[in-house]
Amino acid sequence: MAGPAVEAWTLSRRGLLAAVATTLLAACGRDDQDPVGPPGPDARELVIGASLELTGPGQALGVLQERALKITVDKLNEQGVPVGNLRRTVRLVVRDNASEPRLAAQHATELATRENVHALIGGCLAETSLAIIPIAQQQQVPFISFAAADNLTVPLAQRTYIFKLTPDARDVARALAPLIRSQGFERVGLLATPGAHGDSGVRALTAALKAVDVDLVKVTRLPRAENADYRPAARKVTDPDPDAVVIWGTAPFSGTAARALRQTGYEGRIFFDAGAVAEDTLSETNAPAVEGAYVVHPASLNSSSLTNTSTAGLDRRDFVYRYIHLYGSFSGFAPYGADALRLIVNAARLGKSVDRGWLRAYLGNQITEGIAGAYAFAPIRHGGMEPDSLGVFTVVSGSWSRVS
Image (cartoon, rainbow, N blue to C red; front, side):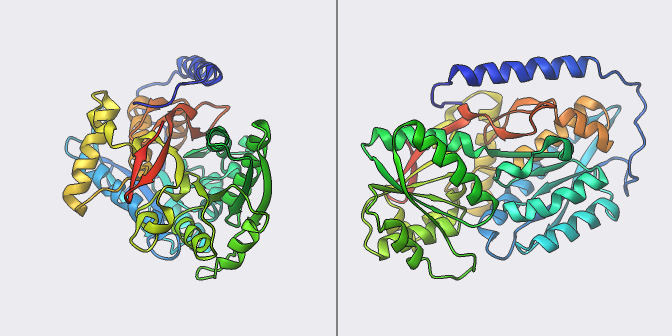
């Protein structure tokens, strides 16, 4: 996959994780008989439960991931999934958590105990994922989160069944900070959403800007209410007259915040974290406000990846073609749902079992190139896309265009 140059420390980290994974899997002997797991309705199925934000404020993200899941399940089931001496079909059980943590926790319990799913995925918002985590951990069901927050997979001793796919806030901030500096900006304001996602951004960006001698002159948190007026927050963050403003949040709030900045007279440069990328951000309502804005996001957002002939590149091309066939157009997003399914399927294939414990063990040792980006899981690291999978994009005429 095309992408920015890989720093030496990134290669070292991936090499270390590969060595650890190889050693542990080599020692992980097993016989041909599956360990006992939860009985499913059909022994020839791999059952995966998904709690998604299909309504409520998180639907801008959840609906896209549901589409990614549908496309990928259909693709996988064309030939089935080889698990031991069986070829299984993937059955997806989807629940709408309405962007409510309470519902997400309820779904996790029902999916784990009533539906007897082999794994859980979803939680596009940090709050819904955080509600699922204790249930998944208690029931010992592998859970792959689609949300972005530092505390999803740590402390690791309390997150042994938990994984995440999104980039770490630290890696996004480390890409944003030199980009801001390279454009000559020395004073930056930060608009961050409330909650764990925004908290991660504040910590990461504060450190990253300091490292490149850029002043963070104002940090303002956006209001929690779904239909809140963002203009007061926009006025606060621009009061010190910053050269640029970073919006750290998720769609649809990212686009709304950009619009509020323009409405209050701010004409400077806007930068987004990866959570901003969704169809809503480039909507007709937001288009004038976000034109010229920059984002750090998995490089799969780049349309030129469709010419990549690697296995991951071909998978992405097939995904985009299927998406366009079903939904008419593709404006770009990170299909974490597709990667989550493939990771679980690969764990079942490698472990020759759908037992929850074996799935967790093989998930925790996968180093792979997905559709959205590259992942390197290990017993000492349960999440975060690899930094060299990130790229810089800008909005040109209402579309994302690769910069570096």
